[in-house]
Image (cartoon, rainbow, N blue to C red; front, side, top):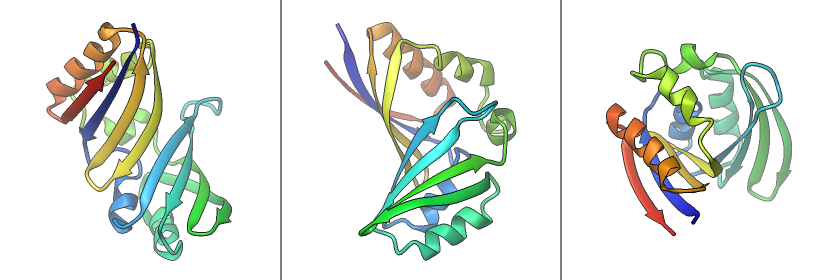
Length: 152
C-alpha cells in the first residue's frame, strides 16, 4: 500500500528560502539533480516574477554558487543553480541530527514536489509504506520544524 504525504519543513536555512522571501508573490519550485558530485544541482522553476528581483536574489544569496537562466516562457523562468555550500555547511547549525537527515535520503520514497517558501519547504512525496512516512515525521518532529498531511 503506497501513501502520498505532504509536509512542511520550517527552517529558514534550507536552500533558496531567502530567495523565495525576496519574491514572495512568486511560486518557486525546486528539483534536485543528484548526478553532479557532492551536492545536487538545483533546477528551479519560478512563476509570476519579473525575473529581475529573483535574479538579484540569486546573485546575492550565500548558498548559490553559480546560476544560469535556462529559459523563459511567459511569466515562467527555469534556472540551473550550482550550490555554494555543502550539506553540513548549509544546515549544520540548524539541524540537530544531520546523520538522521542523510538517512532519510534512503527511505523508500519519491519526493515529487518541493516548493520553496519564505520560511522553509513544502514537500509532497510518494512512500512505499507507512514506515517511510513515519521515518520522516519522527525526524522532523524531533527538529520541531514540521506540519504534515497524508493520504492513501
